[in-house]
Each structure stands twice: as C-alpha cells, then as structure tokens.
Amino acid sequence: MLQKVNTKVKIKSKAKVKNKTSSIRTAKKQDFTIKKVSFDVQGMKCGGNLYLPSRIKKPPAIIMAHGFGAEMTFGIPVYAEKYVRNGFAVLIFDYRYFGVSEGEPGHIISVKAQLKDWEASIEFLRGLKEVDGDKICIWGYSFSGGHVLATAAQNSNVKAFISHMPFLDSINFIKKNGFIKIMKINAAAAKDIFNSITGRRPYTIPVFGKPEDFAVLNTPESYEGYSSLVPENSSWKNEFPARSSLKFVWYRPIKYIPELKCRGLVVYAELDSITDPEMVEKAFRNMPGIELLKLQCGHFNLFEGEYFKKASDKEIRFTKNVFK
Image 1: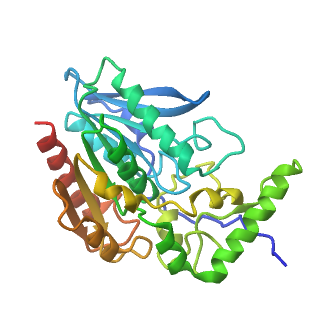
Image 2: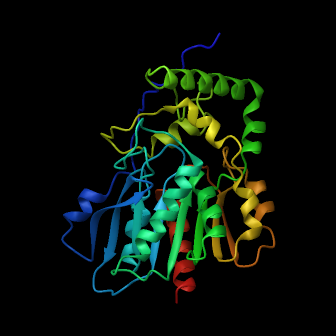
Image 3: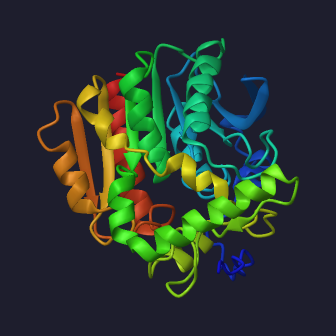
C-alpha cells in the first residue's frame, strides 16, 4: 500500500547565497540595471530578470536557468551579477509553473515544456534592441545543464553553452537510485494522475531530502546542499506533482552531445553524488570545441567561496574568448 509522501521537509537553511536583486538595485555604483521581463511560451508567460551593463551598446548575452525543481533566485544571481559587471547582458528566468512564471498547478516539471521555454527565451533575447542577438551563450546547472546540451545541439542561434554538473541520462539515474525507489516514484505518479482526473489536489514528492527520506534527490549531500541555495524568506515549497516523474523518466541529454556544433564549457565535480563525474568525462572526451573544468567539490558548491570563484573566473574567460 502506498504511504502518503511527506512533502513537508523543513528547510533549516543558513542561506549563505541570497537573492542579490534588492541589494543590487540600491547599490551606489550603478554600473548595471535589472529589468523585470516576460516572454510568451505557448500562450503562457515566463518571467525573468534582464541584467544590462551600463555604457555598453549591444553586449553579448548569457541566458541562465536553474536545475531540478528550483527557481531563478536560487544562487544564479551571483553569476548573473559577475557576468554583467564584465560587460555581458544576462537573462535569468523561471520555467513555467515555477517562481514568477505562469502555470497551474505549480511545480510541474516537464522536459518538453522546459525545452520550449529555452527556445522562447532565445527568441525573446534575439528580439531585444539592447543586446547583440547574434552572440548568445546559454548557461545551465544540473537538470538545466542537460537542457542546454539539447538546446545547443538543435538551435543554430546558440553560439556557446556552459553546462554545470549536467544531468545526462535518466537510465543512469534509475540504476543509481534502485528498483524500490523507482517503484515508489511510479506509485506516487499513478496516485497523482488519479487525483488530477478526479479534481483533487496534486499528490506530491519532495524535490530533496535526507538519505532516509523519500525524495528525488536524497544523496548525503542533497539536504544541506539544496537547502543552502534557497533564499531566506522564500515561499518556494519543496515538492512537485508526482505525475511529473513520468515526463523525465526517459530523458537522455547525453544523446545530443554528438550533435553539438558550437563551443562549450562543461563544469563538473569530483565529489558529486548526483552527476557521475566519470560519465561526464567519458561523454565529452575528444569533443572538439568543448572545454572541461573539474573541481574538487560536490554538486551544490558552485555558488559561493572558492568554487564559485574558480568556476565563474573560468566562465568569464571562456565567454570573452568566444565573443572576442
């Protein structure tokens, strides 16, 4: 008998990485601006923030979106700020069903929908007079690290990509998580589908938890790592409708890698318990135009301290070289 899934994982986050937007807007040194923007995707709106450097006409642009179940305020504003201070325009956005974007019920995770969001974000940016629409780099982390691979392989308007700890293969995820956990996820998905048909509230699964918890991400580093990305006073809930699991169970971004034509930078971690570093190395071995940066850290350590500095410094050099 299926037990009720506990979606109330309490977050005791130190929240060292905070949403920088409010402090940026009140900064005395106005070397860039932030605009709230939105763009249409299949009759719905994706919301985001557009960072524009001052005194630079039509800069190259970076598009950023977050990983599994997350929102644009979770860590990535620190990368957006560093990029804009180095002369790039940056668009960060929430996928539909998340954050400031439209979509009900909330927190639906659909690979197909999120890839459509990426395509729409690129077209939106190309239509802006403030940026150089012919110089676009897409930036993703974890689950969206897989999305940028799929998008870069299929969209000729993408001139470069940066993928952090990329999700590469759902089959590998199934093997790592084991038969029992996958069966629990499938059972929860079936119950959520029933609830949807009968007009009941979504039956949800936690995005992350501790190793003893039932959650999609429950490796030893997942609870503290994911918690550290959630801003203080965030209204985000650690849950998603279980039916979503059927939408990404056969997602394999790894199959797009041979189709990549643009330059790319892949950042991965030796101590990552979610993305297999050996799989990353094997997948990108001898790929022309692809650079690899290996760090001695875990999956969630890229947003502060020395690993943020190492990753972001490398990324700035990479994008400047691409668009020089």
